Image (tube, rainbow, N blue to C red; front, side, top):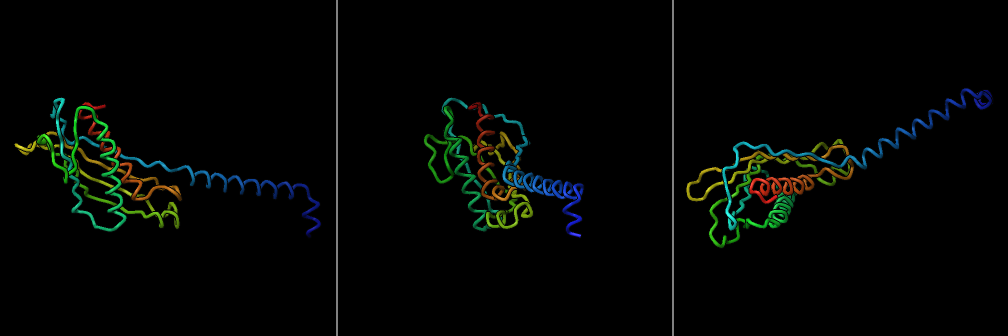
Length: 195
């Protein structure tokens, strides 16, 4: 029987074709896993911005995470969010931004509150161990610009950042915190006429 299979040119061609198909499918899956690293995010304006900053406006930024469970993965994501947020905000020319633990000088007229309402964690270990089966990391929140004296909300937006889900190397909670910080800072700077 073995001689028959080896001597039959049609069966030999089929076996070579099946081998090529298997290699092609494996290569496509590998490439997809390695390069499907982009997440997505949205910022939805809830209340249009009525703030018209002057050339010397100061804003203080408060990050509120009391509604979230306090795992180390969550805390790391929120720290990355804050780091990226202020890295980008501090590129502003006309507006100065202060962290909640910093003194506004001169006094701030507005606060920016960013309240995190939901986080879905995907740790680096889970992402590497089970890849796309680990799901997608997610961060949701609400941002408000509030006039300090009147407590009036002059702008409000919702944030949603979702990681990629198809890669064995990207798409963790940390990646979501990092990307969300950059997205929110860009949005705030645009709203204030800094970009």
